Length: 118
Image (cartoon, rainbow, N blue to C red; front, top):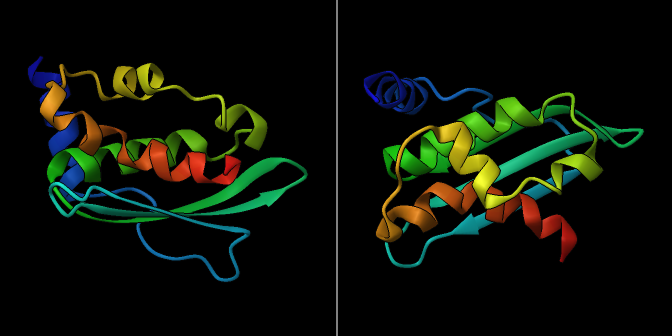
């Protein structure tokens, strides 16, 4: 369990794919009104393949880490496959038990990604 907690802290302190893209194909946003966390994911897609991802998160360690982990997973995926990522998939990537009260924080980046479908 400590290894997973260290991974979460590492992603929080050193978020991967942090920043903004020049001319993204998608700008996806989601927020958690109960705590104020905000996440933005930007994607560049070519021939249904996600070629570049940037993310910015203003929030707790869990939402920041989750966005960082998801951003790493998305690079190189087909967009159609990325949209099939489930809550269980992302929670599995986090590798820690997430309490019901923190579930929205952990799934905030996935909620942003699913904005493509709306």
